[in-house]
Image (cartoon, rainbow, N blue to C red; front, side, top):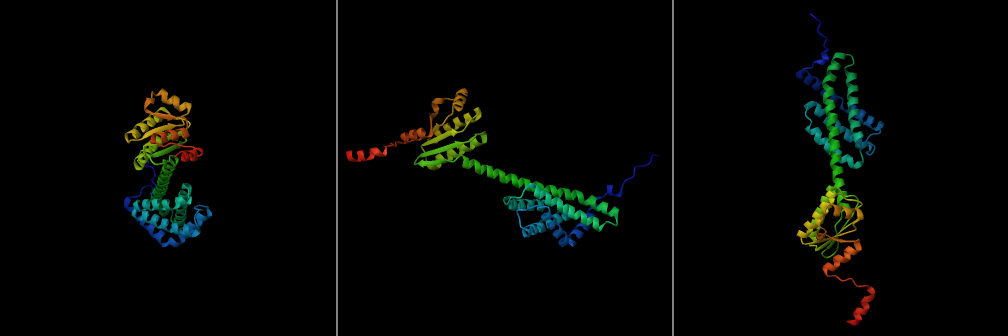
Length: 301
């Protein structure tokens, strides 16, 4: 009979054995909590990670991370660790902490704990191998959990910042009663086009506006999809009882509107913003009189 390949004891670890090894590992980490936590915090400072935080803050966070780390190893559940990772990320991202720093401190902790295990079981290689076989999968999952939690929180903050920037980049301004101006600067993609429509319609409704001047002097180019959206914005505003005057069309944008066969009879356009405001005031019944003419009119009255 052919010889069966040799199987190392570390290659087969039953669920029960893995559980008992993790319990032994957790007991070791709890017993040496102070020493390992301090060593980890020192390694973080030496590696110049979390530089936006003071040593006291690093030590406080290291304590919390360490305890959550050990709890995840003990319970083999990661919900609490996920919640803590999100909370930690929410607090440290505004401080300027980067993703590589978070991943770095978790890997440092893994290194500190592994060195501690090597020191404890250096006289029993087989026991050390079994401990590492039980520890490494859990440690890898913990590192991934913390990293993913941080990245998700950063992405959420970036989305909120992008939304705030978009809102600031498309302000709806009331220049006088029933008259709004929406100056647009920069490229317009479909998402921004939808946003400016929503903002304009909200502005029309909340200010009971009758005329809105949509100035696109600062828009270099629009494609056919955005051009169609612009037409729809004009039509939607009309349904709310407001007339939209579009100003500042470039030759390229005008050509785009012609190419997509826009019914130009439904769109009021004026060459520049000043002309658009004058047309809006005329429609609202305002009459602009030069200051030099005011005394003469008063004398005539």
